[in-house]
Image 1: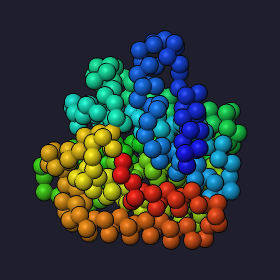
Image 2: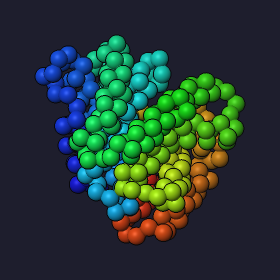
Image 3: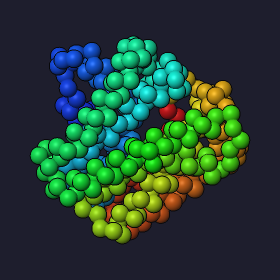
Length: 290
């Protein structure tokens, strides 16, 4: 996993415009928020899904770059004063603290746009056929858009200080966080040559992985240390957000996350040891402290 993370960093370094490219402040800002931090889970999931199908992991480089750019843009916008108003991300000042709000907004816009340009280059750069390229672009667009990540974010904002039930909470988590995981996994599987049955299994894995991740994130927000997490803690309660620990209690939430990981492993039962990266990532997700 550590070696793959280094590979992801190299892919992003190459894909992003250099700091010397005009307009320099924009490209410096894009690189500031995208490079040198984060667990790279979405990239690793895309690689892992491709590997599980016996595909060439190097062929996922376009998808890997795009997914991480979209994730970086979402964090920049999420941290803005009009959203969560956070000052710390990945252990360093958030983008708008360093570059100002206007540049932060435009940096997010640029990263989202560049992500789809990178996907469109997959036939040329990665040898992906055009039909698969279009399928992957559609997966990423759906995962990032109004019925995916952005849709989850708007429901999350609208639900603050509101009485929420498990159905609404699950919707927020499946869309705000889970949708991009799903796009990374399904995109990687498509690049790996998945058939309908294999794609369905990867999708089941994605749904359970996303839920396990978010439940654990909720738990860490209440129990974690800011220094380890690289961001502020106990912010959900301060903002009046409903979380799994607040709805079900800490112990039951931990058990729910554990059951999701069991489902992740079950969904991979028909895959060989080529899917071991996905198995390791599922187990890691509830053991992490950051």
